[in-house]
Figure 1 (cartoon, helix red, strand yellow):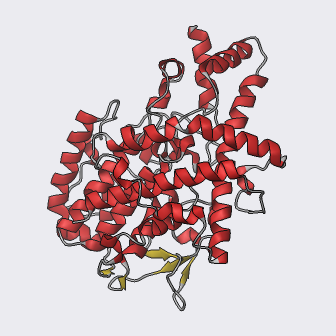
Figure 2 (cartoon, one colour):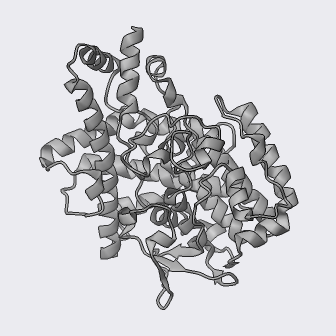
Figure 3 (cartoon, one colour):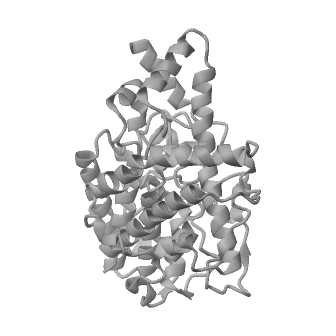
Length: 432
């Protein structure tokens, strides 16, 4: 049994990991929050440099970050403690931006550009465009070729929704890249996260996966065979960024309040995606053990088939959602059930109030994990009926027409209702 579980662990470790969850968080966030009164009626906010924020609030930030570290050590199982050398020093005389990012154990090369995304209903004509390479750290940012970024300047005033929605996509631009000890760069050697637990190293974005996925509800058998699945850190990121958002609002820095809030929302939204909340949807423990047994005797096609199926369906769900959303936006079809799903507030009260200890794991992730097998089955039936050729994720930005499926659309609408509800519930908990 021990050997079988080891092979099962290797199978899971080799799973390819899609780059994104819900493809463009900014669009989803804008649709989910456009009619929320606290956002709709919010005054415009003045763009402020990070350096100004850090200089003015440096002493108070030291206390906040130390309190956050103590809370996470006490609260989150398996949390790897922040090394003392990364402690935030309010009188830091060097690169304050870099020191702040390292105190958060984020990628110190993160761009943190001053930008907005092109969003529905917002006119940025005449504003200078930003190339994706100015916004994100990736050497080949072709996956974001369809997104449009615009430069903003310190001192400008912007709609709160523009700042918040744009920021909600930002963690996918490199916040969590190369933070493990076996990743390139200096950060991983200093951050105490150990070796990267899973992800496909062929893709430069794969090292972010353990921060954007939360496998909190696997069976005991899966955890025994793949203990590395417990090494996921979205709770850490949500707690850090939501705490910073509250602090920024309370201390009079609304631009950074909305921007930190957007960062925190990103990880909450990621865990509404079932393939980010369950490692192998659609596969029973019995099938996994059978695949591992065959692998032991040299027949690895079953294991390879499991890996390929999960990776393909994860990717196809992302493409199915973003293709339809972009088409609806092009057509101006605001009455589509999918468009309405983001803004549907009818289920917001079905969940407990947001809190730092339980909400992400026991409301967001649990809901997504429970629905993962049903979604996977619907995806499989649609792919079989559509009989479409396989398509690698590296080609995923080349969108093409796809047949729609009523049962899959029904599941997708339900998932986007979850996305919207959790987004609003977190915002309600944070805004003063």
